Image (tube, rainbow, N blue to C red; front, side, top):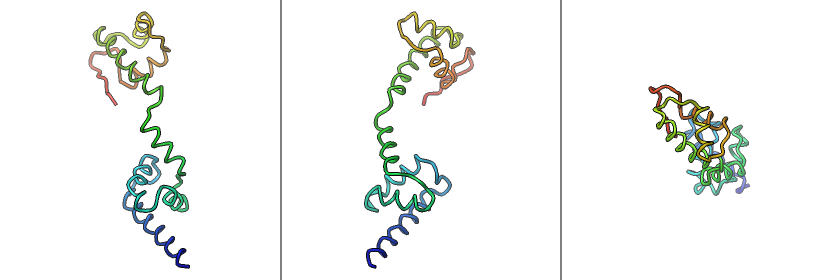
Length: 141
């Protein structure tokens, strides 16, 4: 009975902390990860927090938390390659006085010996708001 009461008190404390922490952003995974990071020492680890939140319609598994932490610590191969390509695209785009579009930038990358798909160049130029107009600027992440 005492163990059950203490478990209910801990669940109640987790829910009180979650209510004040989340306010309007309850179902966003990055917010859940931040909440667990902040309160895991207080409530005895990741699993009790995940269990209580899942019981109250805020579903997150301990594996999901661990995967999110791993993704944040170790960027994917695509992200690493995209960062390198953004620099090359910027150099080529600036050298053309911001006139070349994705097709000409892609051709120049091929000439320089950088094998990359044209769709990748288009995607990165869209993400960076690189257009063939001098007024546009690159928005770094």
